Image (cartoon, rainbow, N blue to C red; front, side, top):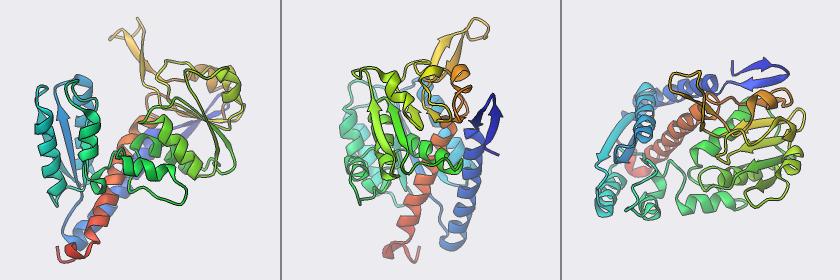
Length: 305
């Protein structure tokens, strides 16, 4: 389980790997219930009615319920004030039943995103975006309480597929705060030699072609071509882009940042889009929430709970 061979490349089945992780988490949640009489709680705050955000939130809540976690929903109107959102975050910070707080991004334009994210307790920052968590991720010998979910999912795929990281050359395409930068820092923690290429990099192709591991997170449809890939490299595609496709009922289809058809002929391993990194992001969110709960349950004040 977890892969299939396709024209030389092993296609990594992120959905199957995520399902295995869900089963592992469900067992741990059951153990916590039997031993502490409590289960992990994940609070998801959504502001407004963006369809894509609503879909993501539904998926997160469903996954939460499936592994036996408590799901707490905070649904606010699109015109909710920044102070109102902050008040809800502070309430969740103080709630002992909540072990993870996720604020669905993007927030409406009138809201200061940084202020809201910084208000989340570092002990409940399951998205891993708090400056202290990101700061520790960047520092040698320091460990953040939480690592951002999508980058963590990328590394988990490499680990579960037993793809070597230590001493390997890794190139990250893209430098976003959500994926590019944290995944580069994570690869560094696993002793890869890491380069980041971005919009101002000259000759991205030659740099990517040197990589044993490519993490594509630029947000540009099929930007990374087959002739960019070093034969046998591991390619993890984080991209989610819609392109026109008249053969589809919706008139469009989902593709990654990598030209999958070309790259799979050259790569050693490759993730598809959809079905690669996407399912892993939610699995890592659940794993972070579980870790937060285990830390909370082991605190002296919770020992009799």
